Image (tube, rainbow, N blue to C red; front, side, top):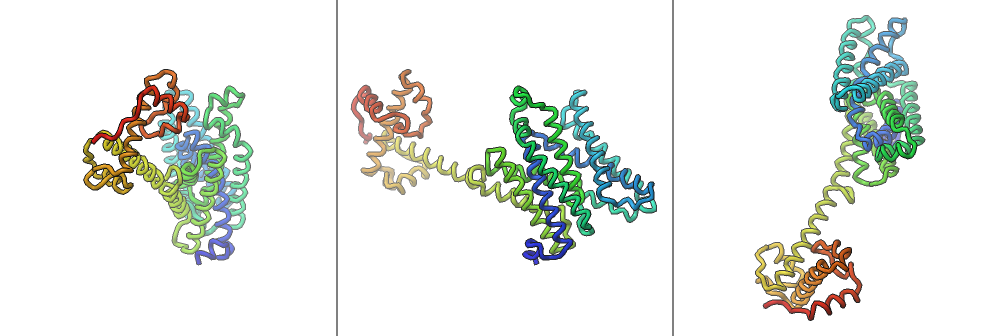
Amino acid sequence: MLWDALTLQLGYNATLVTIGAALLGVAAGVTGTFLYLRKRALVSDAISHATLPGVALAFIVMVALGGDGRSLPLLLLGAAVSSWLGLLCVNWLTSRTRLAEDAAIGAVLSVFFGFGIVLLTVIQTMNAGRAAGLEGFLLGSTAGMLFNDAVVIALGGALTLGLVVALRRPMGLVAFDPEFAASNGVNVARVDLAIMGLAMAVTVVGLKVVGLVLIVAMLIIPPVTARFWTDRTDQMAVVSGLCGGLAAWVGAALSATAPSLPTGPIIVLSSFALFALSLLCAPNRGLLAVGLRHRRFQRRVHMRQGLLALAQGQPIYERFTLNLLRRAGLAFADGVATEDGKARAAKALRDEKRWEFLRADKAFESAAALYDGLRDIETVLTADQIAEIDCRMGGPQGVAT
């Protein structure tokens, strides 16, 4: 059944929800990349919570004008107006007062969300309020999604994605270095506003799918996941979009196979599963890769110190160091050097003397700066330079006994 849902063979409504959610996930992942790089992730939280009073007011106005109040385009329009006002409030408080951005976000978020809850309570007392279904905008609700609703969500996600692609250059420049962007004629304030506006668009479009509480996760988790895999902005945006789209596709499919499971939370959990996989298995920044690099570094340090100890006739008390030397055939179990061990130890001690001589000679200052205790001197100096240093140092010394 899950395979049928993933391949869009589970039914008309499930197909609509899956495609719409996937497009929304791609748009959210790509947009969230620039939001994350600009270090404005919390702003998306304020934007999402500021949509609630707009949805409620749009419903009240439609009912007052004789409608049923459940037209999704008009509800989303109300959410867009409300969230834009919330964004303007955050910008005004940040620029015109001494409030820090996080404090301004907290103030706007709580006030707008509280006002929205009050309006929802008022709506429940209205004759049409009991059938409004507006609580679905809190955590998302796709069970009763119609074709027109899915088209609105899909078109909104596609349009947002197209705008992000068109503006990716200035947004990437501002996200990394706003001062440099300003010096190159980029209007940083307008680009910032564009980033926030695109985040607002994704938030508004995603209300029906994941709700205003969880839409922040679709904007933030995919970019964080993509950051484990790449250092380049364009690649990060692509990977983030793929992660967002895949999480939304799988989450919507899982929700379709079990109607009792809400779509929004399942999408967020799918996105977190991709994050956890990246956290563990990413080739450069994953925990496993970091652990392996640390383990290799630790082995190099112990091997180097063990060889120097053998060269100077010092006892080796560290069991790990002794085991490394013994497995490499450089020492016996009692810590006595083998013939190969004596040669390697003499070479290690000789290299230490060379580095010491190198650091004392200003002519080799640039080469001496590369010393870290583990680097082979042959990777820094030529054979002629090493021979010159050996000549000035004198003949090599053997392993101490």
